[in-house]
Length: 219
Length: 257
Image (cartoon, rainbow over all chains, first blue to last red; front, side, top):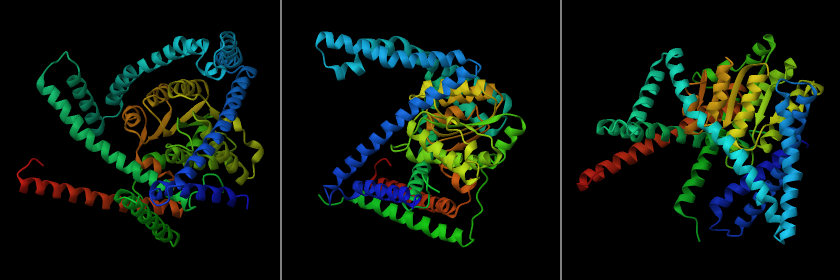
C-alpha cells in the first residue's frame, strides 16, 4: 500500500497532464485541471526549497564545527544567509513602510536587495563566467596532448577553423565560408541528430513512469 | 475546436511508443535480451565506488541544475537512475557518495533514492541525508560550490549526469585539475561541447537516458532502449523519404530543392 499510493498518484497525474495537451479541443475544461496540478507542483517545490535552505545551513554548520578545510567560507555563507534574509529584507520593508510603499513588492525588489544583487552577486558571477573561454582553450590544448584520437583532432580542427572564421582579424572570405559550412551543415546535422535522440530518450523515460515500469519514488 | 492533425500524430506516436516498450519489455522478461552496444561510461561505473573506498576516498555525483516537476524532469530522472545504481553499491559498502544538486526537488528525490538503498541493504542507520547537498539555485554559484566539493573533499571519481549548461566546464576542469576519473552525460549541445575535451567518458544525449538499461538490466529499461531504436529507424526512414520527395518535387517543378 505504502509503495503503491505514490505510484498511483504519479501515474494518474502524469496521464492527466499529458492528455490535456491532446484533448483540450474536445474537453476545453481539462486545461483548468492542468493549471491546478501545476499550482500544486509549485507549492510542493516551495516546501522543497525550505528543506534545501536547512540542508545548506546544516552542511555548512557542520563544516564550521568540524573545522573543515576552508570552513571560513562556510561561515561567510551562513553569515550572508542571516544578513540577506532578516536584515536586508527588514531594511527594505522599513524604508517601504516609511514611504508608504507596497510592502510585498519591496520585499523582492527593494533598494538594498537590488544593490546587493547588482554590486555583489552579478560581478562575482560575471567573473566566473569570464573564465570559461580560457578554461576551454586550455582543455582543448590538453585534449590534443592527452587524447590523440581522430575525434579529438576533428574537434580541435573545427574549433580552430570556426574561431578563425569568426574573428575580424582575418577578414578572409574563404575562412568565413568554411566557418558557415561547418556550422550550418556539419554542426547543425549533428545537433539535430543529438536532439532527436534526446527527444526519444525523454519520451521513453516519461512513458516508463506513466506505465508504472519506472518507479522513481517507490520500490 | 476539434483535435488537429498534429495532436493526433502526437497521440499516435506516444501510443505506438508505449506499445513497443510493453512488447520489448515482455520479450526481455521472457529472456530475449538484446546485446547492448558498448558504452564505456556505464561499463566503467560498476566498481568505481569500491575503487574510491580502497583509496580512502569518495565518489561525487552531480545532478546538475534540473529538478523534478518541470521540463527537466526526464533528464533529472536519468541522473537519479545513475544514483540509484551507485546507492546500492554505497549502501553495501557503507560509504556515502557526495551528491550535489541545484534544485531542492532533486535534493529530496536524491535523498529518497539513497535512503531506500540503505533500507534495502538493512543498514538504515548509516544513511546521512547531508550526503546530498543543495549547493545553490543558479548555475554559476552551483558550479562554484561543486568545485569547492571536488577540491576540498577526498574524491576519486566525479560523475556528472543531469541538466547542465556551459558552467559544466568549470566543474569538469576542477575535476581534471584534481586528477579525478570523470564520467559525464548531458542532453544539451552546449554542455556536451564543453565537456568533450575535459572528461574521460562522455554520454552524449540519448546515451544518458540509457542508464537504467545498462546499470540495472531491468526488462522495462532494456525494452525501452529497443523501442527507442525501432522508433529512431522509423523516423530516419520517414525523414529520408520526405527529403527525397521534396527534392524530386522541386526538380520536377524546376525550383530549388
